[in-house]
Every structure is written in structure tokens, then in C-alpha cells.
Length: 306
Image (cartoon, rainbow, N blue to C red; front, side, top):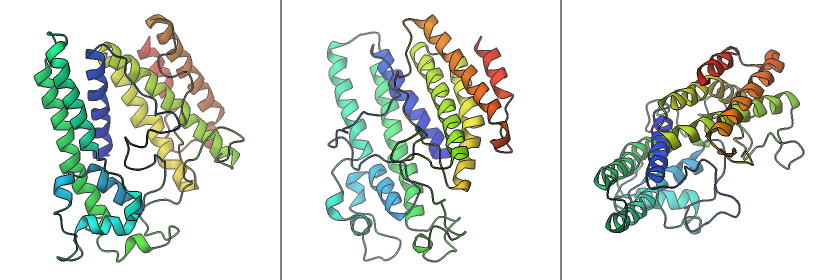
């Protein structure tokens, strides 16, 4: 949860920088085909295992430091060599998250020479540097400990990543890769009840992103608070519940994006309609909802959203 919260703060920082530079916030994933030269690995939603952890470790690492870090397994084994063994050397490209932030800093330095003099570029250099440091140190350390099974929660189970996913000691649920709640798609969730719950997860996700878009565009703390309420409330409830049943929130994309209205008033109306539709669907699915799901939250959100 700590990493998740920090990543959301990184998303906020990047989008607020874009808004300050006169651009719109971006909350959609990149359309297919992906620009593979930007990313070290193909994007996918998948359950955690040693292969996916190796990707996290590689992405978050400081590339200069990575080649000098020894594996916990042996003083004679370097971490990068172990990652290559796990992933296959040909499966790794040269990109790390830190390199993307380096590119942002370089572009920002160019803008400083020709751009808006009212922007505090030095503060943004510091903010981008802090984001990069959190990934290359804190996040790297966390994923590294999971990958090499030194984390306190898993270190007492030998060869934990070699266990079958059905073993109750295995650290993640066996859920489908890249599921979707859209009907009649190759990766559609088969069980109709679980697909309905996954669609409710999508509706909460989309409502949250509509609120975040408004929050980033207008520096609106109330919209941030409403988005956080959805994240930590109904979306969190469904996201934790579905994997126990063999499914997962698919985080499907919303085709119109998250600024679909002609103006701010229209966007606010669309957000309100999305919240109302999400509430109505939750009421229709009340007998399927997780025990900790607070169905009354939507009326509170609508009252606060105004």
C-alpha cells in the first residue's frame, strides 16, 4: 500500500507539472501498439510471481548501481545476472523508470530557457528528483526483498516462488492475465457474477479518474479527496475480494477519456452521472458485494460533489 500511495503521488506530480506547462493531464493508458522503445517490458495486468518481480526490480533500479549489487543468494552472484536468468537476456531492454525522469528533467531544462518565467522550474527539478529517488531506493529495496525472498513476510517459507499458485502459502492469488469485464472478448471474465462485479470495479475506477482529471486541471483538493474516497473505499473492497474468487478488477479503459465534456460544467455533470450510474449498479448487485463494501458511500460522494 505504501508503494501504491507513492506511485499515485508520482502520477499527481507528473500531471500537475503538465498542467502548469499548459498541457492537459493524462490518465489513460497508451493505446496499442505500445511504443516499445519507451518501456522495458510489454504492459500487462498479471498476478505477482518471481518473473514479474524481476521486472519491477529492473525497472525501479538505478542502472549504474544495479550491475554492482550482489544477490542475497551468494556473494559470487550479481543481481543483474540473476534477473537475466529469470527473464532471459533477450527479454530486457535498456530502459529504467529513472531514465524517463531524466528525460523529463532534460526537457524541463530546455523549457526553462525559453518558457514561462513565472514557473518555478527549480522546485520542479527538486520534485522530479525526489520521485526518481523514491523509485531507485525505497521501491527498489522493497521489490528486491520480495524477489529474493528476504522480506520478513515470506523469508521463512523456502523456495516460496517455486510453490504452485494453488498453495495457500503462495504470496499471490492465481488470477487471469489481462482480464476484461467487456463481454464477448478473448479475455472476458467467464463467471457472470464475477464479471458484473468487475464491471462495478471499472465504474468506480472511471469515476475516480474523472475526479482526478478535474483535481489536476483545477488544483481541486475536494476532487482529490473524493477520488481518494473511491480508491480506498469501494474500489479497494472489490479489488481485494475478486482475487479470492479467481478474478480481478480489469481496469478497462473508458473510450471517451476523462475530460469528455465541452466545458467544466459539462464535465462536472458527466462525473455526477457516472457516480449515479455506479451507485445504481452497486444497488442492483447488492447481494454480490463484498462484506466490507459500503454501499452508502455513493450518496455521500454525490452530496459532497454537489
